[in-house]
Image (cartoon, rainbow, N blue to C red; front, side):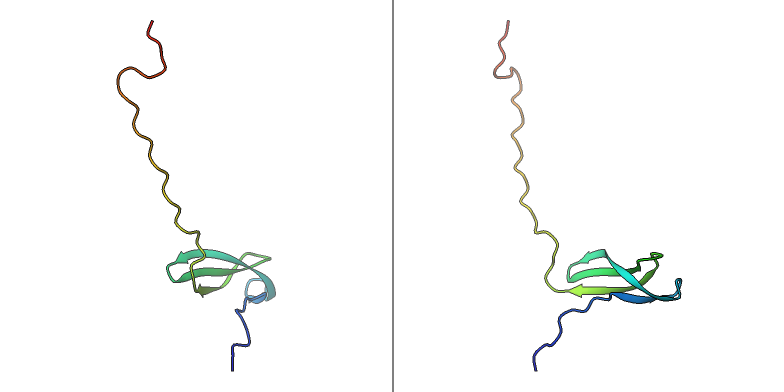
Amino acid sequence: MGQQFGTFTASELYCPKCLKAQPVRERLLLVLPNGELHEFLCSHCATSLGKRTVTGPSVAPPNRPRPQKRPPPARGKRPGLLSG
């Protein structure tokens, strides 16, 4: 049988500070070589309620090519200036 469900994300978790289930916000903590570490926070009081690791291909932006360095300015007279 094939996979029936994709990834689950919590919409509400029990908050020990609020003493009831509350909506949660997900915050990215770390980008790891094998995935990302996320934290669930209570939307009402911002208490940390749990963590999850999302594995798979990296969603970090790809490495950009470095800009090329300009050659250093020539020493001595600067081109374009007239000596008077």
